[in-house]
Amino acid sequence: MSTATRWTTTPATAEEWIARAAEAAAVLATDAAARDKAGATPHAEVRLLKDAGLVTLLGPTEHGGAGQDWPTAYRAVREIAKADGSIGQLLGYHYLWFWAARLVGTREQWQRLEAEATREAWFFGGAVNPRDHDVTVTEDGDDLVFTGAKTFSTGSRVSDVTVLEGVLDGTELHVFAVVPSASRGLTFHDDWDNIGQRLTESGSVTIDAVRAPWTDALGYVGKEFRPRTYNTLNVPTIQLVFANFYLGIAAGALETAATYTRTKSRSWLHGGHDRAVDEPYVIDVYGDLTAKLWAAEALADAVALEGQRLHDDPDAVTPETRGAFEVRVAAVKARATDVALEATNRIFEVTGARATAASEGLDRFWRNVRTHTLHDPVAYKRREVGRWVLDAELPEPTWYS
Image (cartoon, rainbow, N blue to C red; front, side, top):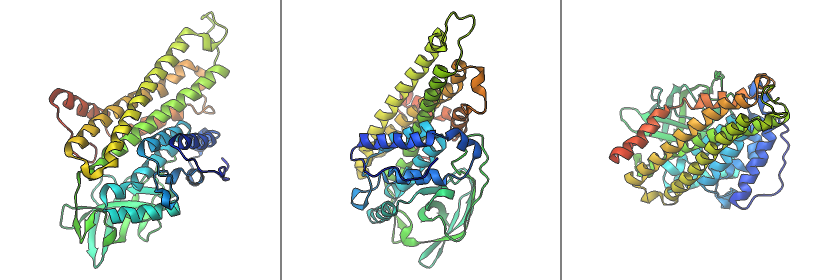
């Protein structure tokens, strides 16, 4: 994959930005299978995202960003994930962490952070994994000191800045801060060795007395946290990121498989057809999987618009509107999971035995989806929807709901 800058113009509309994402995806697609096998740290891929302007898609226009909304960002993630699920995940996580200051911080904090992040085209990583022991945060004068470890730190080895989260010592107060990824005491380990999403650099991190000024503690004013319901929109926002790169991977699997079927698959000798594309069961499977994908994409797009209305007026978000949005996101996540797992598995039925060759790389789509869909059990997403249908019960905000 060439890292040369390819773009000399800047898109002006959402449609043009989605087209730009598709152009970047086309570059990634040229050697996606080979890069997946090599498993190298994706510095060139992140450089491509920066060159395409996608890293600053949500950034304010007055500082050089595109000023686009979340529905456009989700579509961009989907386009990138069609070509490379790992890079789609990295971009989606970047968008969430870029937005973290808005979700949690004060207006002064997020305006300052977004301005600098956009001007410098920072790529964000995050060392936030609620299943691990909490990182301890202690005070040292005007500084906060973060100490601990996290099992996963997606994207941090290719990031410019990392979002840290911990609990203030002696309290139950959580603290978020954005620090340079090159900070002293921050060590990202090369121990991500999973079967899928191999290029996400989701290995562990050691946080050894990493310092941040109190003024960078997001949402704190005079060392006192100012809570808002909008703070809790981080979970449905990132869960919708998950769903969109699942759908992108599924779309990429179907497109790649269809090309294989058209150009390489052989008709069955007892089927009575000269071409595989004329086999009725082949046509049926592609039609079935594509219809399911399109339906899930339509739901994802509709729910993204619902979420944007909450982002547009964060102070107006209530527990009820937040909860209703989370239920809708849970439905998207459940459908996207099922559609993506089915599509990435069943493509082999319509491509044939030769399509299982390692050189074809068709297995990467299933490996990528299977790996990340284990992030949190999809049954609990269906439960959120079911409890709402039966008892109008809204999910309590947690790290996963």
